[in-house]
Length: 482
Ligand code: B12
Ligand code: SF4
Image (cartoon, rainbow, N blue to C red):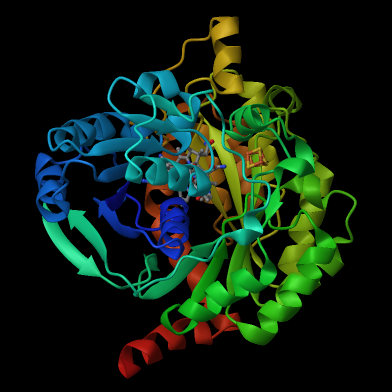
């Protein structure tokens, strides 16, 4: 039996890479397909790309095509499933959307796997190979959510052993490269743990916790440090920097100290990570920043989301301004760049809520950058249900890439706050005068000219370069050697 695993607009697709490696370790032949590249604007999947997939993999009766997808890719999945089913191959879907909306997927897929896919897909494949076809629909039949408590048993994803296939606008490329380039820099994404101990209302985690019956720290599963380090050693000569995509990299301080000691010794590459303010509450922030900096942490993403107490309550998310400012100071003292995530376009918020966030961002020490996300209502999320209950009009769909014609005054001020040479006093004044036309015009002109995000990202890269020259010399040297 041949197996293809497919992801949309996502060559990282760590989830299907992890599944593929596990199935390969059990003797199965698995091909990985990546259809289209991520863009800032969601486009329809070109029919040529689907046709090229079918021509290249050539699904036949009895083969398995596993499609991994998130909500924005529902229509693409439908299209691909239809094309595959003509061949008589089995279509299996997994990932976040099928986990949450299994009944919807039953209209176009043969099997739906909810939750972790490694052992569940193996079990399905082995049954199919024995000639037993389980009942169509959710696999296994009892609507189970597959939760793997012990994730230490899985092998790490390997790159370049078997070529991946990337298809863009119908054009097929076979590649052994490690994905994720930021300009010339190869930033490798991985995880040391899965799951998050918190349960913010706009996030998938409260649902996954409910399905699994594991809450808080019990929901967080940690990989073996030696496996993570072996994975990083496997790619080390082909990458420049590491991004730990754990929902919160700092949840276990003693583990962190031990892991980073080995990381520094064995990998010694600059890295970035994510953390949540509540994790850092009550911790010795200078100590944490020092541990991270010593191991070459160059940047950290911290979620503010909203500084409004009303919204924090609605989001089920801790926020404390003093705590945020202390952690910002601790990281900036150690030269670690901080990127703050902020959620805008929130129909639950009024002007007072927004101004609390603007005021907080204007209180943060430089240097920092801000990533703004539009609040997105995914099906069945806690916040979506709350919006339905309150009769708030929302657009369901689930793509955060909304291109707005009009950017609000608060959003412009937050963008401009990232620029160190604009005095915060001036921004505060302009924001206070937001009802006046001259102020709105000035802010949007400044915003358009100065705060377009890419120069800021380059500035951030430059700052990192000053601290870690290897960050730029390494990709150049690697290219020269290869
Ligand atoms: C890291 C991450 C990213 C990274 C990298 C993605 C990656 N690793 O592939 C980046 C930053 C690029 C990203 C981008 C986006 N992301 Co994202 N991301 C995540 C995050 C935090 C972790 C995903 C992950 O890799 N987990 C680790 C692996 C091991 O788990 P997994 O992917 O879920 O895979 C397991 C199972 O789901 C299952 N499985 C998965 N696929 C399949 C397929 C088959 C056949 C089977 C059987 C099983 C199976 O088995 C896997 C192994 O156990 C999740 C949050 C979360 N908790 O899921 C959000 C999340 C998945 N992202 C989300 C969104 C919306 C996006 C974007 C669409 C945002 C946007 N509009 O730009 C883009 C889409 C990019 C793309 N085309 O994929 C949403 C999806 C919501 C939804 N209802 O669909 C999530 C859930 C966050 C949230 N808001 O709640 N993301
Ligand atoms: S802290 Fe982040 S990952 Fe965890 S539940 Fe909240 S939003 Fe989701």
